[in-house]
Image (cartoon, one colour):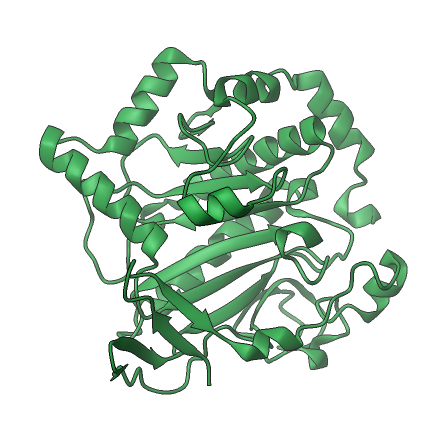
Length: 348
């Protein structure tokens, strides 16, 4: 059984999950061809994964069989598990509880060689739809307080399998990083009676120095004080505190914005490993005037070392204004050449 333990000094919860150490890896030990044949996320390998929770599949296909385009399964090596009660208890001055939550894998495509940036607009939209569907389902569980969507792309960014996938972890507490963001947004709203994220969007669109691209309902920016070089946020222009407020039509716009932004990062930085994270309002809260959901995309270009770990400061060697200008410089012709060089999903 995993455990959650609370640091009594800074209030940060950590997950102790020894099962995670048993995960396989398909990267350096085998070639891509062998990895694809052995990959548990590929069609025909369904028996090697837990039973699916959700899928987009052909009408004539059966659950847990080939014929799917997108598939959501429980993580075989979960950080937290669905079964059980929280069982909060002290150990002297320490606090702990059982590792109850949810850990799911969104297998984004049946094609081993296709990543999110290579998909059709509709295929990418289905990925973002799947996030919403799983979040809506899990929000009904009263034990859960937060649902975090994230993607690890590349071994250096934490991906243990190369088949394109993202993950969802639902936790019985609100993570400290999210709480800090929410608390800061609340303080700003109490002082100015405006959402800080809405103010950021307005200022960045006016100044244009840190805007990567304006995507109608969304904008991609380099934040003013980024922790990492080329850290990029995708934010809805209209105020929405929860990702669940996104309309059906906006999912397609978001998918196009994501694909374009990731293509720029891939071209500019030679396909770096990266993470992206969705920050949204906690579970079971009504619309919040002060918080604003957004995605954070973080290419892994630098290492977190002693100073960062010891101080909480991050040293970023690239100014966000320079990063934004560089990503903007990837023009339409560059993007067109990139897309022509990538075979269509049906050809891979």
